[in-house]
Image 1 (cartoon, each protein chain N blue to C red):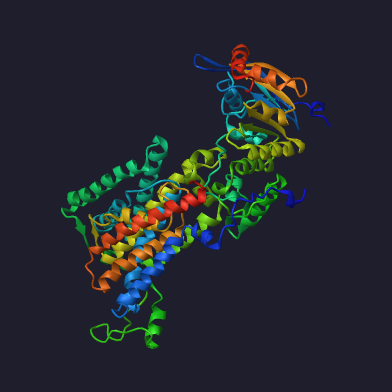
Image 2: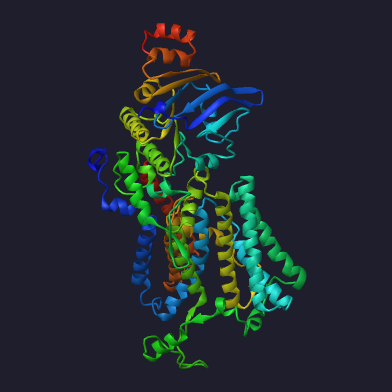
Length: 263
Length: 371
């Protein structure tokens, strides 16, 4: 089934966001369907972060509307967006390195086991589910007790993604998940994105690396200086065109010439 | 998909058992406890340190350390300090004395009011810290002076002295006082004495009674607090929130952990522990002094650090902190039994603190994979 047979899970229409005199987003429209990976590209300062924070309920748009499964939504906090099914994996991951994988995975939503009048955390269930969810995404943990700090960058991304998936995310926003990773780790994260997409979750993949975007993306939207430069479908755009759009055309052509087309 | 195609990084060495044991927070404290006991069994074994009376002596001192260390440990794991613990001990004791002796109110009222007052001050500490975002070091340092000042000011103003006695008389027949000043297990110790397993007084008006006639409630409180705190920390949802709040408050807030509430509650718990300490002490001595509890905040923090907790929060163990307190009690009293100048205890404190912090930093590097 093609993603385009579905209605969008989240639709952002004509979003504007002003911070005082600064117009961070100007008339941005964007939608995400179940089971697709929609890449949001843009150079530093293009407004990517502001845009996803608006989607995740951190910022309120100055103008424009957000539709979630066809209904108009007004998220007051990231918690609201999370409850609705929009999960965000931020660059800094929101993982606590000193705590075990299980403790991180369940943080804030710990499973409870009652013994008489007392409520305990159900570590047996918690550990099993954590191991199972990680295995589904292709990572065999040595032990659910190991501290997150001992995991590699890619594995940490996977824990964060597995957590979002387990708690019923319908849309997963990944904020530059590959920017700090090496080649091998990047490949792992990209394959994780592919696995998650196949389960019917819509993925918003933010990156400034065109090759990473093209490896997994179904659609590509480019942001530049707070505006969308259009959305393209897979196969209808070349890496060069994407690169040019991101960098804002003219200067990049000149630069690329001087660098001998290696960028 | 089978689990066999999952990526296993061949460069990650199989962690040895030793290394795994090393990253348990309590390890340093366990080794320290064994070393300290071994040392004193060799050098003070025949001094009476390990007969019934000697054991009671150092266990009581250890229990004192333990009560405040448990509170300080929970708070430190939640990412904060409380430097006002020592002043709080003096303040709580004086509060009980003033309410019961000066105002002549029943002692149980004095104890309950004091507990309410102390936990309220703890909550105030916490609220100021989370609202202003100031380091708890500064906020509680202010309360160190504020509370100590009041502890000296009020008795001088009202009674024209800084030591108030007469609490034992007031405590007689009270229903709540024995919970802090009483002893349990009298029957057991009488039986042990009859079996000639422990000594009895051979002279004086208590002739024939066992030298040790029960376990002070202070020790019961110490062990009880340790067990409850350990279970809460390691086995409950709230415990996970405590670790999360101290590990990375922002990350915890992202996923809906009520970080501010957790921190305030831990400040209250620390104040509660200081109040337990003070109440037991007042009941034992029968008096309250304005200088009680001096430097206790630092001793509590040192015990916690020896127990493997990180000063930066998010990592530690109540059992470790309790062992740290045991090390303290044994060394402080052991030096006395061994006939060593007691001022050397401070030297020991400083040295062991340095070692503990260095060890903890190393352990943290192992856990977080920093190089």
